[in-house]
Amino acid sequence: MHSPSGHIVGKVTDSKTGESLAFANVGILGGGNMGAMTLNDGKYRISGVPVGTYTIKAMMMGYKSAEKTGVVVNAGADIEVDFQLVETIVTQTQEIVVEAEIPQINTTSSDVRQRVTSDQMKELPVDGVVEAVALKSGIVKTGDDLHVRGGRSGEVQMQIDGVPVNDPLGGGSISVGLLGTDQSEVITGGMDAEYGNAQSAIINVNTREGGKSFEGQVRYMTDDFGRSDKTYTNYDRFSIGFG
Image 1 (cartoon, rainbow, N blue to C red):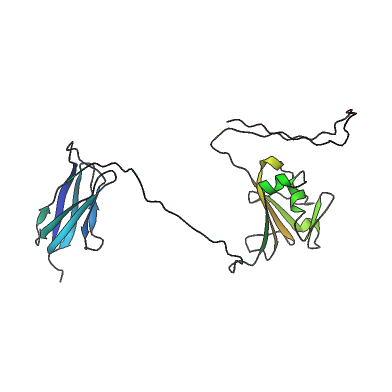
Image 2: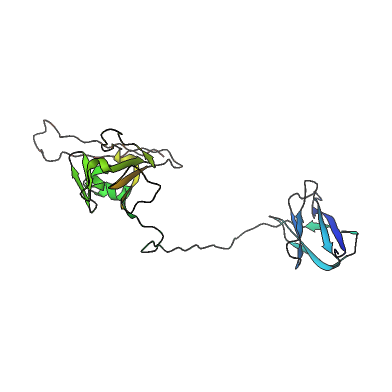
């Protein structure tokens, strides 16, 4: 048999203007998950409330919460409980601090990953992403080819933002602007099943994304041909920023 129950109905309005407040939350304290949300006209209805005496609470963003105690629910009856909420201004919110610790060893993954960030590439004496990757342990660069842990160059899969870009016939390296690179990741062992067509390594280059401000950088190299006073200053760099 079902226990006798009633219904709690009512309306939530602004105490100053009398306007209906839509999407306010009305709940029964200590009543489990029983509650309702007001509609566009500010009205709500909580059905199937067991017979008893309850405390009802109304809440809405930008208003002070209000409670009504001693609300008696009778079997088969609609009990009307209205709320007039007082507007308030939130001047300070509680600070939320989220802390995370990077594990030294990832026990859920078997692969070996090495990363080169954009800041590191700017400090390294390299002209491209491939040269920066070649400085990692276990990787040797011969001409335009990379050999990882003694493997052939065709055993390395090149990716840009997770998309393979290898030549299906002869392999080969990739050419990505150094200033347009966010970071590069090298997987040299224990590759997961999601990676295919690679035996030695996976090299994934992540390109940079746009920000809130308009900016740009230009990088160029020159041999200073014809300069008689300094023949060794064969590298210049400048950046242009637009804010």
